[in-house]
Image (tube, rainbow, N blue to C red):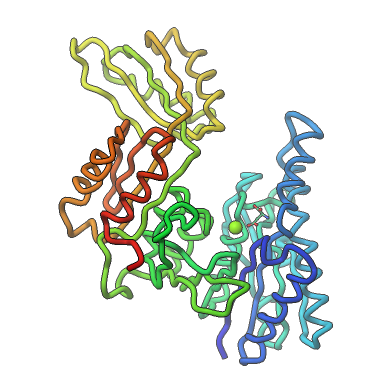
Length: 407
Ligand code: ASP
Ligand code: MG
């Protein structure tokens, strides 16, 4: 008997009819003799609405209450799926995060899971009951309050539960049938990957591919949980996220991703002396602003230099505010903020052993007349910042250049 965790996202449980369809998929696994834990998201749109209600209630709100509010969407889905399963003659019970419990830290709004006490759940599963777990939820024990795991967090709930239960599989059911080489809405030739490594998936998730929450991939990698991304609506194999050893033929580049959530800041004539980077990025870190790409130019006169970096678009105003408020001590002459930029990344574990991958990228962009504003690299990723207007052209050209197009 295998133990499997099945996770269904918001679009898969958007209404009662869809939840009925999900129940059918659960029944299929139960009938095959598996013990099954199901993790559900809130019905599509519900969490967004709860977030909006919270924001319109007060401009500055208490994050503990935010979590109490936005975690509620998942309760509804878990209850509904349990009722429908029971109606089909399957023993099922809903579980909220605190009931398991899923213990987290105190970071309300984007809490991290510390541990899961899955013993009772395990006992129930062994007795043949289906556990329907409300995703996204945790319990912060010191104050005994409900926490949430950040947007998209039920992916992480599912993977963490699979790790705690030592499940044989963690299937993430969603409205796409797997992980693609690029966004099929933009790149016509994009194709579904049969397998992808944890590391590539991690880069893809953090570079803007929305299919899995980044933390869920980190967790899967750490505990070696075999994850499969697959379609709720079509019965066919999805994409397996696995260890590198399990992939025989490694592509040099597996995917081309992008993020529109980028803004660029340049500080002109920053004094060129030790400690200047620390004094710029320290205050940003204190304000919880995430800085991504950074370039510091060499200074022509050894006295001052330009510093360019990127932040999330929604953080731009705050970033400008923080920097302006430190203008005196930072000593820059101008601050230039720009929104019309996007980040395009090529990702692949094969880059470790192949040379010329970056050159190919730069050449492809140059041949289309696309100017590169900032470049960053990691062992398995090259990212460039370009003008937003060239996003589609860049994605398509790179997809072709690396031989990813469907043939
Ligand atoms: N409902 C939550 C959200 O929309 C969690 C999830 O769906 O994963 O972010
Ligand atoms: Mg999701």
